[in-house]
Length: 258
Ligand SMILES: Nc1ncnc2c1ncn2[C@@H]1O[C@H](COP(=O)(O)OP(=O)(O)OP(=O)(O)O)[C@@H](O)[C@H]1O
Ligand SMILES: [Mg+2]
Image 1 (cartoon, rainbow, N blue to C red):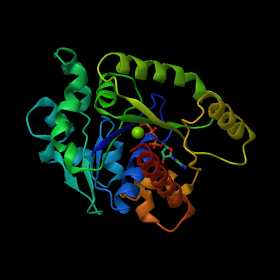
Image 2 (image 1 turned 90 degrees about the vertical axis):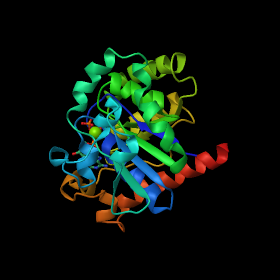
Image 3 (image 1 turned 135 degrees about the vertical axis):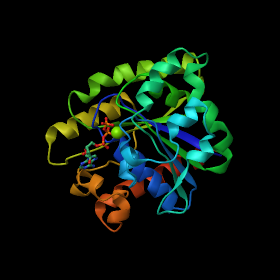
Image 4 (image 1 turned 60 degrees about the vertical axis):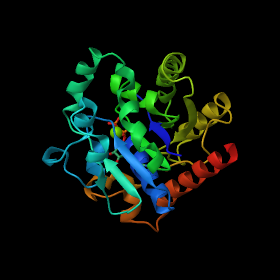
């Protein structure tokens, strides 16, 4: 119950938020109760879901991590009844500094999520493009990580650092953290270099790479303007199908394990 998956890669703009939002929506549309938590002060997932991060009147993840409110009190309903959102706010940046002073600073997120885990089948954490304390909190709270990778040459360079951080978290605060899979995103089949990088990563991380590949689609590039997950904006397109396929693959992989 309540499988918690962090979507993480410290490299910016690789499709973390696009994946978090559309995977969460796909899981919810296939009748899995899903909670999307925006763990990024940029609050992009909050905006992609149609909420204005600057005009937020209710409490956000910040207030929950501060201990001012229960995480449950921050949960927002979305267009899909089985999908809920915990919004973020820019003031989460300040929390990273405040947490440094706290005992158990890596486990703050895990603690506030714990009471809600039984209520959801999947909890998806959208991480910031950094390996700072908020991302460490997400990795500490998570059962597994999905690593979106744009198949470009330099994509591989940062992966070592991310894997090092995952190992550090495994060795300290979350021994059970696993890698759910590397996910290729923003893929362009016409580019030879993309195909070469995919082959290389598949060889290096055998068995840990999702079969589903997310292609480059205008639908996703324009998504922020829809104010809802792209797959809801145009559900019958090939683009939307990518994330539906990912949801099916994820659910199947987890059934195999149980
Ligand atoms: N499959 C795709 N096809 C086309 N554009 C995409 C695709 N996935 C993401 N994008 C676009 O690429 C940009 C970055 O995507 P996204 O915000 O999901 O990345 P991110 O890793 O969350 O970024 P950040 O590191 O800033 O959090 C956005 O403009 C998004 O619309
Ligand atoms: Mg993002």
